[in-house]
Amino acid sequence: MRYLSHLIIALVLTSAAFAQDRPAEGPKFDIADFSKKVETAEWLVEYDGVAWRSTDMLPTDDKSRMARLGPEWFCFQDEQRVWHAVYGRLTEGKYDLVFHFVAGKDGVLARTDADIDQDFLNKHAAALSTGREQLLRSIPPGSPRFNQYIRKNSDNTYSVWFFPAFQPNRIAVYGGEGVYLIDAAGTKIIKDESYFQKDFRGFASEPPREIWLDYREIKKPTLGGVFFALYYRNYFTKIVIDTGESSNMLVRTNDSFVWVNVEKDEKGEKPQ
Image (cartoon, rainbow, N blue to C red; front, side, top):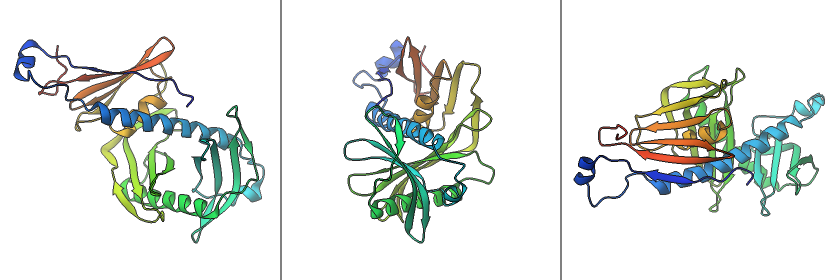
């Protein structure tokens, strides 16, 4: 993975009186859940990089082939963990593969005519389509643009994610995320763990500064919030995911980044 490693530090800052109220208890902050989300979000950021690099390589002057593309483009890692990106269209359950890119040992993408199993393509594209249909039912017209991500699980189900894209006006948006577990056929949503606030909110990407994401109505950081922090970490000096029970900060330290997770007291405030 090409992204910088991270260190998770759970800081439980309590007053003496508060500490006496809960002498036998450890931190409330769910490190295991947070660590899992960080791991997934790092993979998603890597996926996003492959998607952007492959998009830049599309031969837009080849109008006949570009016209065959649909919204069901995606990236995946093969059994050797090599990245691929495919572009095409799902029509009546069959995926028409138009462009296929694969990463070399140096990570550089190149066009290839290598075959991909048709059933593999069909089901990935179907799962993306199923997830996108559910997302569009969940957001109002005129919502920010979303990027899409997919990963096949060990039980042959599919995890499909939709997060607000970096908008054309250079606004980094948060406040909504589509998170779906889809069956092995790619046609049915098994679990919907999406989260949408009342409104989408965002920050101009310049100038570099500290920013706070308001998630105070929920107890834990969402996957989308963690993804936002990792994705935009080079644009801001510090990104804080502020939830009802903790403040989760991605902080730059020299040439790396550190997660600092600070619990709040029972009133939802950071102890002094």
